[in-house]
Length: 333
Image 1 (spheres, one colour):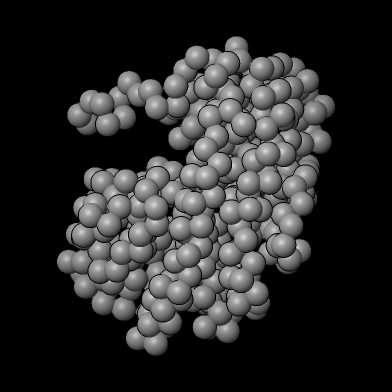
Image 2: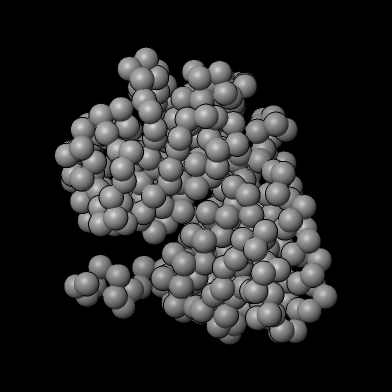
């Protein structure tokens, strides 16, 4: 596979699910000590990656869980932050400045802070009360967040089957390796067909809305300098549909939760207008070893793996490195 280091891929994912004992110990301690609310704090992609877990709590729990933007938390404040609050941060490098400021803001209010990162000696790891460290550059943080939220909600009697899910996640590296292999020819074909496309319209819903936002902003815009529109499938018919034309590239991210019908509706309409609609559907992947009731929870991980292959092929056909930036961490702002 193009630009794919299989041993590194497997090792990094294994390091995330290997955190299970520490995550469970933390979740149990927080539950026993008592918490009034939980804040999932990020910036850019790490903010978007929190949305599925806020949504999981909204659907199943009475615990107030809020996904928040680090910089906005500091400047706007939050009246419910206090000593019975917990704030969770994620940062691949452990150096995200907005997150570091938000950690200090939370700690000043007595909030207990948790950080997931890939570097034990990073500023984020040193700043939080509890640092849970995977291998360097391990991405995404969904395995850790799913374990943390699953255990917390299970302890509250609000998540059935947690132990079964956590056991199955041990096989996640192999599961996602098969996803990557299956996605390779599709990714190559998409990139070849769209090497000169300078605008993409992305749609997703449910627990894939965060990934839709992330892929639009953090990959296509930041890493490939392409123009995009991103819209939640439930909101598609409230304005954004007017941008469709017969040659508009539409990317539909389809999962397996209760919002699937909303995304189906968008797909059907988009295909009436555009001749260039591409559907990336988690149902296309076997996910061997994952029980049917958990498949929808893994949708962000599955599509992150699929679109990771797309990204590498776009990099190839466009001659535009995914590491190239003009402004992000290049200029002062």
